[in-house]
Length: 431
Image (cartoon, rainbow, N blue to C red; front, side):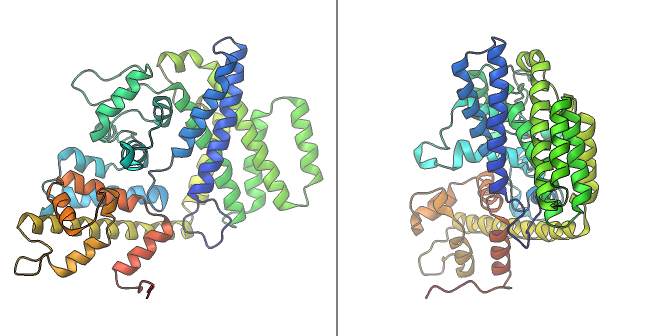
C-alpha cells in the first residue's frame, strides 16, 4: 500500500483487508471443493473452511501500526535505541522479554494481542473467536523470543504464550519446541491459505495502485501482471480468450489494467490451489512448506514481480520520503507517551495524588495523561481509579499500553496527534 496518499484511490488498510478476506474465501472454497472430491473432507465442511479463512483474513492486519511496515521498523528502532543505549533510565524496570519484543515489534503479534485480549475486554477479553480462526490467523506460531533469535516474524507476544499453547493443543497442532523452550508450533493448514490470500492481494493490488498513482507507467505494470497470468493460465483455450479480450480493450488503459489485474489474481489462486493439493501431505503432517506461492508453478515469475516492486515501487524516492516522515511521527509518539506514563507512575509511587496540595501530581503531566485512553483498560476514569490502576501496573504493562495506543492509530490520526503534541497544530475547539 502507498502511505499517506493524496487521493482516495490507492488501497487503505481497510480496503486491503476486505480484498484479502474475499480472496481468502474464494481460495478456501476452491481448495475445499477439491479436498471434498478427493474424499479428504465432507462436502458440508467446505463452508466451514471458507468462514474460518475469511475471518482470519479480516484480522490479519489488525496489529499493523501507522505507515505499515515502515511503522514497524520505527517501533523496533525506537526500542533498540531506548533499551540498548539506556537512553532513559526510567524504563529500567521493563523486562528483558518485553525489551526484545519491542526491538523485534511485529504487527502479527500485536494483532494476536488485539483479537485475544484488548478488543472486547469487557466480555472476558478479546473477540472470543474460535480456536480454529485464531490458529489460522497465526502465520508464525511462535513467540517473540524465537523471532529475536532468528530475526524472523512472530504471531505470539510472550505474555500470551500459555494462551496460544492452549489454542494450538486444542486444534491438534504439533509442538516443535520442547518443554522449557520458547513456544513454537507447526502451522495450521488453513494459515497457508490466509497467507496466500494476503500475498495474492498485495502483489496484484500494489502493482495496480502503482499505475493508478503514476508511480510507474501503466504499460510497464500491465506487462508484469500479464506475465503472472500467463504463468498460471496454461490452458490454451483460456489463454486464447484472455489474449482476444485484451486485444479488444487495448485502447482503454484503465480497463486493460483492471482486466490484467483480475486475471493475474485469478491465475495466482489457481496456482495456490494446485500447490496446496500437491503438497497436502507436507502441510497436513506438519513438515510444512515456506508458502503456497513459493512452491507453485509461478514461483519464478512471482519473485520477479516482487523484485520489481521492491526496487521500483516500494523504494521510489517519493514513497521513501513519506516513510521517513512516518518513522519520525511514530517514534516521537512512542517517546512522548512512554515518558508520560512512566513519569506519572513514578509520581504516584512517590505519593503524589490529584488532590490539591504539596503532593499534587504535576499539572502538565496530569494533562498529558488525560489525553491517553486509559478507559480502554479501566471501566472508570475517575482520579482515584486512575491512580490505583497506574500504581498497580508493571513497567511491561505500561509499555504494552503505549504500543496498543500508538500501533492502533491510522496514518492520518498519528500525524494529527503528533502535530498537536508537538505544538505545530492547535486542536479544534468544541466550545
